[in-house]
Length: 307
Image 1 (tube, rainbow, N blue to C red):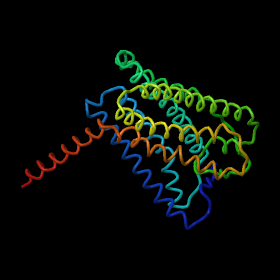
Image 2: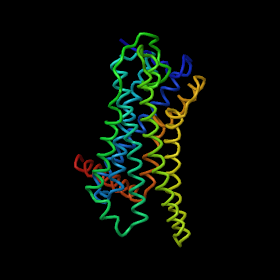
Image 3: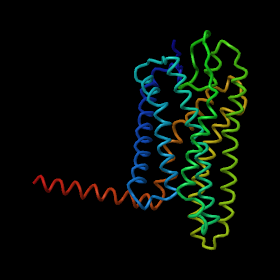
Image 4: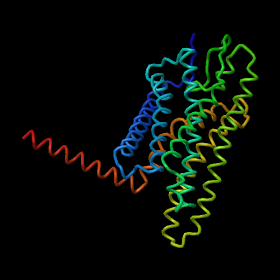
């Protein structure tokens, strides 16, 4: 009827520290991504393909974080590590869909930047509203199709999951039946869903960097490299940890390392993405400055009316 998530072990002294750490990360992640979505929707100057993708990425990160961290925080706060079988399967399913969607959405974003830099004259015609919606919708639909095979099974052995969330690999190991087919499908979907998007993103950035090298202005090259290098680091960390956990075969002794890598793509990446992709952009900073000034003006007006 229920599983036990072992989480990060039984070190009681670390539980309050971990709770505070993950609580701060959860608040910062949700607040940062909500801020990006609000700015993109409210400011008409940000109604461009790039910010359309960034807004969708921020919505995705909010869902992604909310799928995993609230349950982990509750476990760290109360000490209750149990989760129902149905709740575990639901968490596992949404985690798989959101992870695959993010992988594909990052490809769409890199393709958008590729077109903007390599074909600036045709960019507006190629990346129109219809194309943007098709890329985003395709990312979601492909993810749902890719994870439709998630199994229905019975569990009769150990009910302990040696992880901090319901990931498909440790859950499969608790199944009573023959899981070879599911394990093979999981490996195939994981390999295709991580390696292929990673390769496409890297190819896009190779072309982007080659174009940047032809920029005559040193200042222009430095600015472009600064932006691309930050994006590329986040992409490499995200795809690298995913591939290491789900594609590269490892022994059971690497479970602790897998948990550490899982923290990177489930917790840290959703928190860093708003900063790397959005808050470092001049347009977003300008939009944020205007929004703050409007709030201050509204507050002053409201205070003056009360007087």
